[in-house]
Image (cartoon, rainbow, N blue to C red):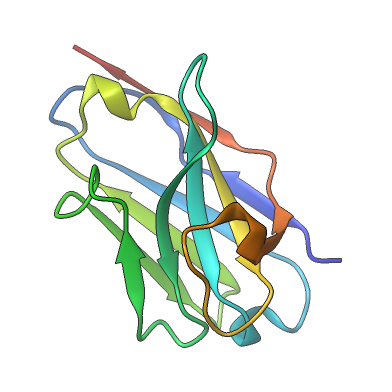
Length: 124
């Protein structure tokens, strides 16, 4: 069972930037897609971004496209989420997740392991 630990969350003003990191344990990190999801206050968990096992394929929710960038460093067993031009509606707990194969869609059912989450708060 892989363990995923997110970091990098915090409080930022609207228009600012944050970079989230997710460190994974285990030797098979490079064989699986990774993803980021978020859960805004009082709402259900929603898809943010996915990246394939090699990093060659990425996908984003429409709400973050052009502002967020997902990337990975397989040598460091780490996936990142660079968040720019943050908006108050980006406020949420952000979770990273490991997929069950080389690729993953935005469906939570494609992911088998989840981190504990990191809080991102964007003030207006």
